[in-house]
Length: 82
Image 1 (cartoon, helix red, strand yellow):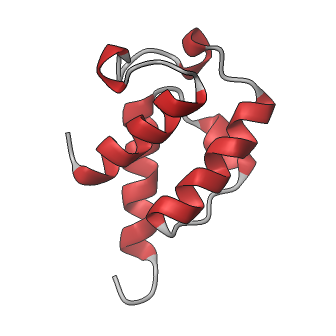
Image 2: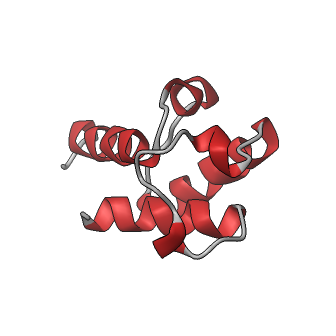
């Protein structure tokens, strides 16, 4: 698991009140009770922790934490100064 993936997983785990090591990276986010409210909270946490801005549409377009980690990594690589 990459550092970005670890941060994404830890932030998600905190929101769904579950230990990070119990989360299946390939399971649909909805399997953990992901709601639009949690999605907005996760966006804020990722912006703060990873210094990356994602839209709600981008977040809802991914299916799993692995997909989300890859999206955050891509956004970081695309940002100026990367």
